[in-house]
Length: 545
Image (cartoon, rainbow, N blue to C red):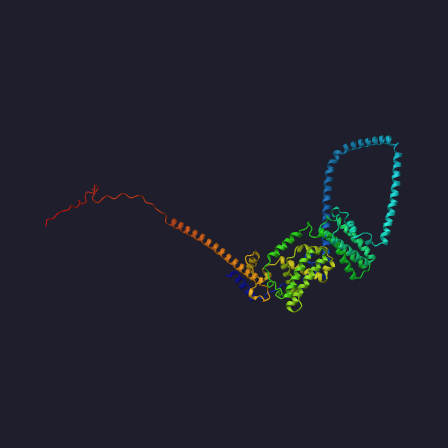
């Protein structure tokens, strides 16, 4: 009745006898940059941190440019040599004809010039007057423009730049170069602009320079829509680095204020750039999102016990923490700023640590955190997971990803996604046969028995598990009937083939020999003409007595 589940439990018992269940363990050194700089690495950067990745990227890019340049020079030399060789063969033949054509052209040009001089001599003075009038007008306009420019510059010097224009006008100014972006600013963009302007007022002179730098960067990005997403990411990272260096060296801003300023700059810029750089059509981010979602749906049967998750969801407080963690990881997709998305990951991770701490009555370790994070991702199936990870990787302030708790939690999330993509039977301590059956939906692991529920559990939940168990049993019975029917059909076919073969063998071994028809036998009392030696037939005799 419970054949497949029984086999599954037997296999699990055999594995437990051989060796204890091994958990998902990741050494903390594996989370760091593989170049040994001490910062956190990232699978999207091939294990490097953002700083080392940019250095490697620049080296590879310069090498590629140098190789392309050398190839272009070589091709140009070959083309020039081929052209020179072809011209040397044709030069001797066309030398006399070329001299004749050159002499004819010179004479024609001289005659045309003489005629033009003859007819345009009287109009030359009029042209000079017109040219002088144009020069005077241009000078007047130039002086007026210079005066306007001087007034505008003086106004900008003595008036803070955020008071020169409202946030809506400033947004339209920044978006003016692109006709497709001329529209009314969104409520969120307007709110972020006001917050950014109020924040910069506390920085006085550096605030004005920051504001101008951000406007210039937005204008530049609006003109670079045709660049690849990697090149746009490179521009954003360079901008972050340059502004941070100016805040520290030129304007002597304290480190704690630099961090706050960079957070506000990132929020101000990425709120406007979000719709253009998040999951762009030129990348395969959407394809990766669908692949990860499909993979997580196929792994819906994975239980906390398979991942060695030290979380007991029967405890109400732990169950609430799990729900909050799933909510936070799903809410990440609704945020537009990379820092806000990182904040969702951090809140999710802290809920996970609290759930583990309540379950074990002791602080959670890193070996407990990663399996639980994998379980939360499998249970929540966050939307556009890969796109969010790529967006954070490309446009987040690199200092946040390299150090701190945000960088640590984000690196663990990347490891969790990579583990889910490569999860196999060995990772869950299952046999390959059971893993394949679970993945194809032929069967599922044994559900929790209704008798083991606590008294406080809702009756509907108990009934749901009973129905799931019944459906699982019916599914197993149906599979067994189908398999037996297929086996019976195969046996009948084999039996029919065997009987047919035996009959053919007997027929071949003992062929049927049909003899000709025998002559009819003569009657005993008939006259035997052929043999006269036979005695005559007996005659009846009567005796008197």
